[in-house]
Length: 324
Image 1 (cartoon, rainbow, N blue to C red):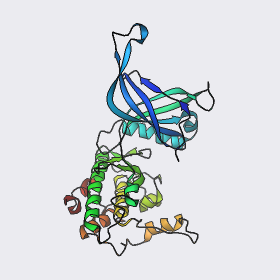
Image 2 (cartoon, rainbow, N blue to C red; image 1 turned 30 degrees about the vertical axis):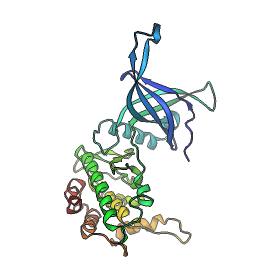
Image 3 (cartoon, rainbow, N blue to C red; image 1 turned 90 degrees about the vertical axis):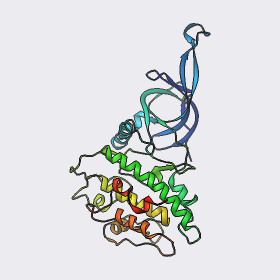
Image 4 (tube, helix red, strand yellow; image 1 turned 135 degrees about the vertical axis):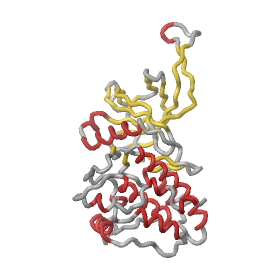
């Protein structure tokens, strides 16, 4: 359940862009902050209004998502602070229809609704608003929800192909700008009714240099590659995102993870999952009607040898993605 944004917030003005963001509603909440929906207006001079208030607001026809975080809380957590800064930096410089963009960031104070008259320092990131649920919802209850049963195979696989093609193009664009995401998963991809996608949450994103290796074991366990778990040799970056894409496609087509384990009480057995990722042979469930080209693509993305793994820039030309 989303927590209501605890700040008095009707409108925010950004002088540099002469834009006013008028609060509409709270979209989501997290550990350190909230995402609120705002309508955008430009502040224009109105000769019919006298004095210092001789301005009026003109709708610019766009809606924005403002991420508002408690400055004191996030700055006290080095990891969270680094993630927020990464997201600001990357989304502010990427311009691709498949990757979320941000337009400006600011530090300001807002009055607390819990303690009227008390000001709270906040950091605000102004982002584009994308209307669509997480890909996870489509896998559970949407057009991918049936899995590739014999009844729904052709249409389901076609939907998965359209969505995945767009995801690969977006990730390939990030890599062309020497940026790795490092947390690609179904929760970090939004999809609208026309299967347009938007990759979000680039807090773990990082600039990479070809040949320079990283050892930080970031991301989500189920989507982690063997070299991320075994930090001895490290990783460069694109090959890590490629593995995560393979897991994502597997989930889209089979509605389960390729490497999964539970304890006796049905809790996730993280140690066993990590062991399976490192050592188990890739297997595919029975009872699903999946094309051989799709199987080949998943296998190529989930190649345990990072040097042989299919990268997103090449994946977009795979025969399965060339089909319509």
